Image 1 (tube, rainbow, N blue to C red):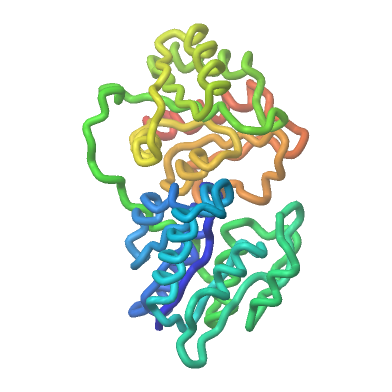
Image 2: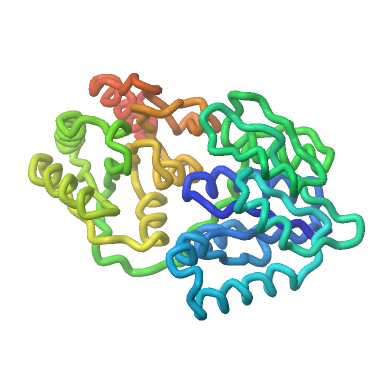
Length: 331
């Protein structure tokens, strides 16, 4: 059986679709599973050993120069690669018009099917017109977790039941010498997010960082934009031993996560990667619904806050202490 997954973005959503791949592999061990994903995330999908061919798409970049000859040539090459293999099943778990068009572009084997979501979950960007391109549409509950939603689409298409915990099947990124990597155990703060309402107060980050410094754990501060870098610099100046990191490519950020003693982060893709690896992680929800993406598959992940209910600093400090003490066997 040849299966194609169409899940192009975003970073956290790509991560949350990975357990679906392990599910398919368990029930159909000889299936070929390919994936269409935004070019920025191909290396991440490559860490899942169950995925065969990764077909990069550059929708974000193509939109800016759609009418240029170079862009049209790239789109043509993408379409040819997409149609190189005939698929028995094409799965679209994003439910957008753009992803359903990609689904329609894929070549089906005789009797092949295109399967996607029948409905939105609360707050999702689902576009009902996407169902026009489906041979089968799978209905999910209004409050279905992002991981479960993708798993249910595949299970409904292939006729199996979900009876085990999510398996992200993420391997370690390729080994590389990273000059910024500390020799001693460290904590990572994923403190930056695009939407101001999702941010946690800087004073809280400082208080938490200072408490970690008393434990002898340096805080590493990555960033993804000029504004986030400025915020990270302010944190570094107020937290003893904190380290402002250079701009990190995605695979270096994954290495940062995998080797961390602890990760504390907002509702962002890199925090979800930490949870997917089962690293000790405290996820902070300040203005997004926790039920949608919380790391609920591991007792190494503690989820705090909810929409409009940012966690208090003492709650986070208690969760951090619990995870650190558990790791050292003192609790």
